[in-house]
Length: 252
Image 1 (cartoon, one colour):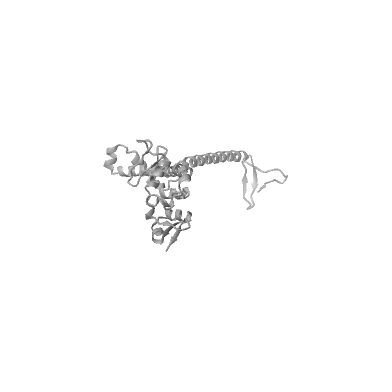
Image 2: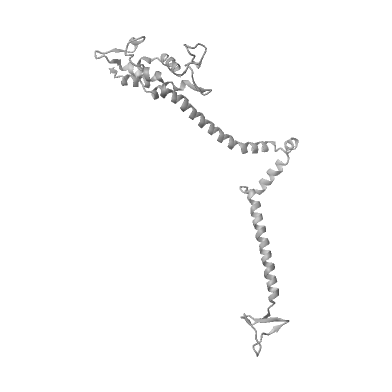
């Protein structure tokens, strides 16, 4: 686009505006002031549109995750009918109840999982720790604490932060030295061991002597305890481990 000039090289005016010639030869009077005003107006309109768009986007963030507008609108209508009679009449009481249940079920499940984890950790610390620290197990039993726990651990529960033992009938084990009180851990383990049919095989230095020894085999000439194959097979894993660990023999 070029400015149109007369023969003397002066700009040609039309209605006081300079005339410009476009590439296609069309002549147009250019209103500079009007153009500036138009640009200013368009900039203002663009700003208004931009601000409106940003405001709309901000407002829409509150509805993130809602993909079904019709369903959301219906849900709002249901919530607005909080009057129980209206809900019953509208047949929507179960819908509201289910929506409320869904909203909190996830939180309940999460809290339940955490509670189970904490309960397991508490059990491992209170029960597992008690087995590993037990003086009775260290002094009196011929098998390691983890095997003792594998055999008798299920008899213990954590109550009021302390390990409490139950016998095979589901009754709490009470102290024989402190009548009326719950047996402490070592006394409870001792009681459980005494009730164990194969106790002679897990007690230190029990050999084949003592009550019930005649039913559990005899000693060989080398002083080692000897069991027949059938007697050995009748033992549970803890008893078998204790017999082998003590150097006992198995005869066919």
